Amino acid sequence: MIAILGLFLGMGLLIWLALRDVNIIFAAVLCAMVVILTNGLPFAQSINDTFLFGDLGAFTFAGRFFLLFAAGAMFGRVMSESHAATSIAMALVNALGAQRALWITVLSGALLTYGGVVVFVVIFAMYPLGLRLFQAADLPKRLFCGAITLGAGTFTLTALPGTPSIHNVIPTLKLGTDLFAAPLLGIFGGAIMFILGMFYLEHERKKAIANGEGFEPGPNDSIPSMESIAKDVPHWGLAMIPLVLVIGTILAPRFAVAMGADAEAGWIAFASSQPVLWPSFALALASLVAVILFSSARAAPVRLMGNGVQDSIIPLLATSAVIGFGGVVAQTGGFAAFTQAIVGADMPPLVSMFAATSTISGITGSSSGGLQIFMATFADSYLAMGVSPEEIHRLAAMASGGFDSLPHCGAVIVLLQICQLTHRQAYKDIGVVTVIVPVIATLLTLALAMIV
Image 1 (tube, helix red, strand yellow):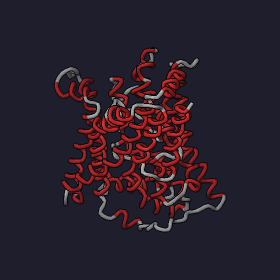
Image 2 (cartoon, rainbow, N blue to C red):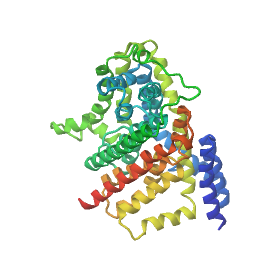
Image 3 (cartoon, rainbow, N blue to C red):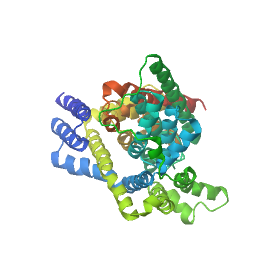
Image 4 (cartoon, rainbow, N blue to C red):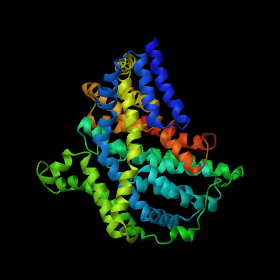
């Protein structure tokens, strides 16, 4: 009984501390110790061999994915500092009109994240322009939170095939799939997320106008003029080149094989065998090209890219610490019972897989953490049931991106801090587009996979 209570105490404490903005690395270590002590696990072994260096260890995860995090953050910093990200958003403003603030925010976030720019960079890059657009459209800032999370934090991270996101890479290491696993399911699920999310945001926009709810800046908001935002930005066509290069490089092995090249030889075999290194190379190559293309990035390119790599350290360690906590939880008898209950439940395998991934991601408040834990502890069971690796890859990735965004999610907390809003003011919109919408889309995609 004490062991089970300790397990729930550790998980509940992690959520409580995250909601109070306690450093997630400290919180994960503290909660792991709570679980270790209450479950009678060997202390030194659980810290060294499980939390730090086990298959689900913090340093094991950090080592596996350091290059991907570093390359992604470096690319994001170059695209931000060169104003290329702003250029793409401004092109959408010119095409759609400033009154389409919601659409511009969603589409800009989607283009940037699908092209490899990390979510936090997109939020920082889009926030000044978002303030100007939402002020011009007289829309509440809470809807900016909903729009940026829909575009940058849902379908481009977990659903669309080919995205270089960590969520799309994690399954490849366990399942031997590639970044384009189950492309039709991914496109279907991504389209559902986009359509439902935009329907909700447009409904909220009309309701806000009818209720007289308009734009209110935060106490520290400095709203730039459109002229100052557009100053010194490169042409949008040039700004798109690095994004296209990322996806094109990832796609290159497939194109080469389609044109008759030998899939088992040379660089094609290397790319296919390196699911982490190849997208990392694509992001690094695009960073170099961006430095060459944009004069503002050429002033101090080495320092700029170095600062980008520095940007990756805290997100990497935070994610790794949560996974280390999950590794400790996975050693407990309570988790073993949970695993047996899920896998042995009288329900279709895809449904129980959705339940397992969603539950773990919800507990950890991390989609990448939940997905990594699922792959290490559940994937073999579903492969043994006959579920195809491609379906596990795509559906588990999509399922990880639902309940991860509950109020204690670190990304949600950071977004609200940037926007100077509280959970009470803005979480409803974030929750609908990042929890409810992805869950519905994943269940519909799951149903499609069971039919076809």
